[in-house]
Length: 345
Ligand SMILES: Nc1nc2c(ncn2[C@@H]2O[C@H](COP(=O)(O)OP(=O)(O)OP(=O)(O)O)[C@@H](O)[C@H]2O)c(=O)[nH]1
Image 1 (cartoon, protein in one colour):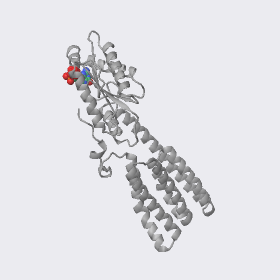
Image 2 (cartoon, helix red, strand yellow):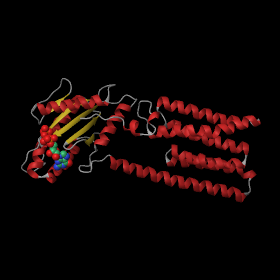
Image 3 (cartoon, rainbow, N blue to C red):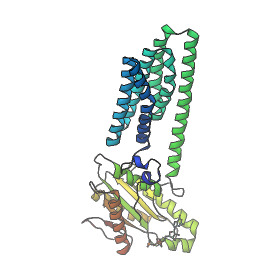
Image 4 (spheres, rainbow, N blue to C red):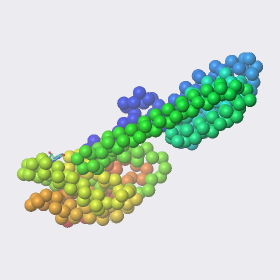
């Protein structure tokens, strides 16, 4: 079976940002936003320095320095959540400080600053931060602006926030729906090959120590005969029923994927090799006794491998694949476990 590779790296225009490991979209967006803010703010900082407006210059240059530090931090650690919140708060505070120091003409900076928050944070969090910023802004501008002008600023900023919130909320919803559909096998409802590959890649990319997990590769025996003797629709029905059997005997925390025609992968999260061996045996026996197809007994072979500690996800898959091959070679309708423990029917 071909081993999955990181999908992010080769086909993305931002592959050069990947530093030989998979980076999330959020990391890349945050770094790009920070990188863009440097040429946007630096000229103003330098200009104010030249003018002798020291305080404004310090605010601008502090923003530039902070954005540079964030890029270095995210680049090296890959941690973006707290950094995204920090950047948004820092940006918002910087924007308010600049308006406070330079007055009303700088209020135009509120619009891009507030929209940027929606790129980096969840819509609700961005809206919350922007609402607080708007209140502070009103308190600052009240003594120096005519009421009608201030009202115009408040209404336009509120509308920009409302539209940005609706847009990012809808986009998030659509992305989640698309993601679910793109990773679901249309016949059985299990995760598809793409979802399985992503899962293995995310295991490989995980930096924290993972709890133990085992991979079960299950392949129906002589499935070609089912199609040949009973037709393709009957074969499809068998696959759907098989998936129901797998769901029935696994935990909600276990993940089921159809990675090939009549081949399924189950990631048993939190399961030791011993527990996974028992699960595999339960599944093997459940498949053998389940009425998957009237008058045609159907069996499955299963290979099991524990997640290698500090090893590659590809090794994990290879090991389970070898065990599945051993189960087929051993006569089918059996379970093979990587390591010493083996079971035979
Ligand atoms: N009905 C149906 N059949 C499928 C689907 N995908 C793959 N198959 C069939 O699955 C069969 C797989 O056959 P083989 O790879 O020879 O494997 P097998 O007959 O199960 O033999 P062993 O795996 O060696 O026990 C082929 O006949 C495919 O047409 C599907 O979505 N629906």
